[in-house]
Image (tube, rainbow, N blue to C red):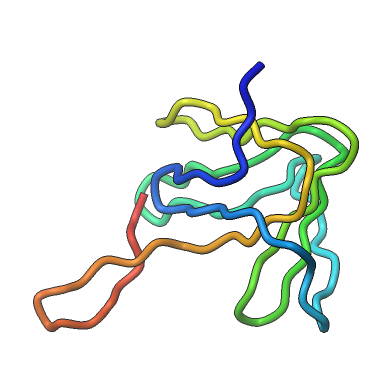
Length: 107
C-alpha cells in the first residue's frame, strides 16, 4: 500500500506538519467517521473510517492525527488517498473570484 504525507482531494488540502499547535480541542466523530469537510454543492464528505484518526480544531484550524498505521481518506467523487501515520494540517482550498477575492472551492 502506497502512503502519502500530503495530498489534495477536491476542495481539501492535507499537509504533514511537525506538531499540533496549542489551543486545539478534540473534534467529535460524525456517525463513526472523522469528517474533514462537507461538500456545499453535493453534500458529499471527505472522511476517514478508521478509529485511529483523531481530529482537532479551533475556530480557524483543523488538524488530524493518524496513529499506529496508515488511514484512508474517502470521498464519493474522488479516488481514495492513504496517509502515513503522523500529524497533518487540513485546509479548504480557495480560488480567486472575478472580484479578485478568494472564495472557498466548492466540491
